[in-house]
Image (spheres, chains in turn red, purple):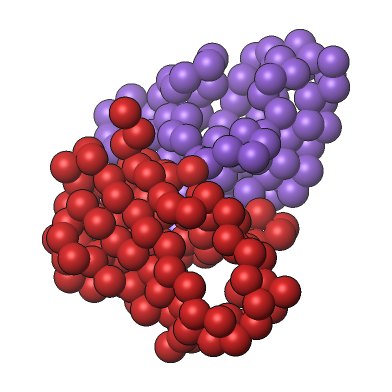
Length: 112
Length: 113
């Protein structure tokens, strides 16, 4: 039973499109995150939610909008996709902010 | 602002060699420290963590790390690496007062059989 799951695993789309990535965790954690990993493997935090409330919002373009319908789910919607958005997006969760994180399998987004 | 520096970007070793990956952090308070591993094509997994107590912590797969507070370091070690240890290794730091985690840029470890 997967602890942190993401869908889809792969996403290929054209510039200008809008797409969403979904994340669910069954660990009972209060905190969830979105990270972007680029081609050089650098990992950058984008957002963090604690019990459905946004607590971390790094300098991410407004085209990225997270939504947390409940504390087990954190979705990421991206508007007007650009070539530079191509990356692997990881969802993660932790019991509390600052504790060890459990990562999902990642979504490889390719924008053409 | 907190930051993490991993000095080695790419390390290449032969099997059975010893490993030490450097990690230094900058933060004005007490910290939780982590090492994560990302095997090729996979997601990040926790290798080990330090919250408090014994500064020498042991993790999975024979890895250990030592927290040296005076040096703001948390280096990862393994006495004898295996080919299967080939992966990306990330050091991370978080303030103990519910601070966010900051990840280093990662170290690519390649172990030659």
